[in-house]
Image 1 (cartoon, rainbow, N blue to C red):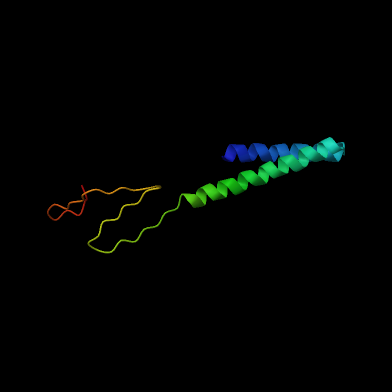
Image 2 (image 1 turned 30 degrees about the horizontal axis):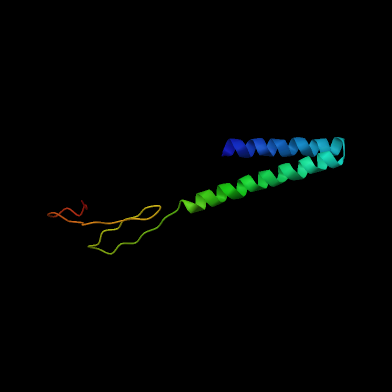
Length: 86
């Protein structure tokens, strides 16, 4: 994602330089569009990073199951002193 953000930043700088050198409607549209894509890429990257965070608190003697989606749990047994679920 970093490469995409760098390329979009360079596209914005290029279109902004084009707007300064030849202020036309076409160069203005290119500048606004590239700026919007650049900002959108940063917002999307932040949302993807926030979405991946999970937190879980489990009381002692309990078994916690954590997944990114639906979880179906069947029969869980503990054997001996091990606290690993089968």
